[in-house]
Length: 277
Image 1 (cartoon, rainbow, N blue to C red):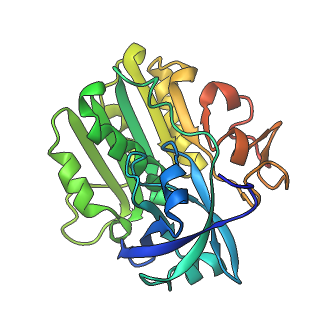
Image 2 (tube, rainbow, N blue to C red):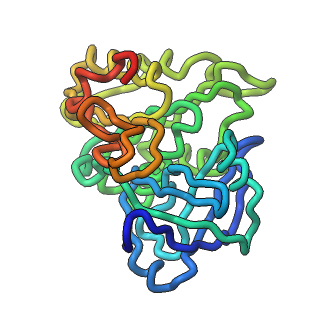
């Protein structure tokens, strides 16, 4: 694409309200040539620019082979995201990207895949699920574990129902607090790790969400002999430039925006969980 600091104009094609505070914007570049050239890998992100307000890093959740639309799922929590929440079909915003390193989906072909997410941490992994579902025969058993603070926070409910019925796929949901008739586990999703099957030599684990949750998952997987280089995590930091210049997302000697956001655990093992990093 063009200079990494210059956004391209994109139009909102559709807006989907996923939950009380979470929504998805479906976008299309205004310039058809830009749309035709744009390519990304699952796990990468864009800098989404709201004109006159600012920009924010948002994961791409659509499939890379969808050359017509670009989906971003967003939680309205700050000035920019609350402004994005007010956009309607036909409105315009700016897109810089894609940036960063994505998930190792080519390397994972032929193996089982374990996905563990917490909260809106599911958004960076939705692209993985979409990718695998469209290419289901390339992968072994798919286990998706998702935890939310409250059952009302669960998003992508329609997709979850469809994924549940796909052969060789296991879906496990948990909520710290649950509304009446919640059919899944009440408590932390990590409490259910002992219930899943793992073939240590044939599994890739990918996780995203609160770092405390990911530490628990890593400890459990280490005890079950999953190699460090078979575990991958998507890190969240304050990414403002997306090209490693501003330093806000520095993580030891690395930059989350440029060297991540997806890291093999083997690369960050010595830093992960260290306060202040």
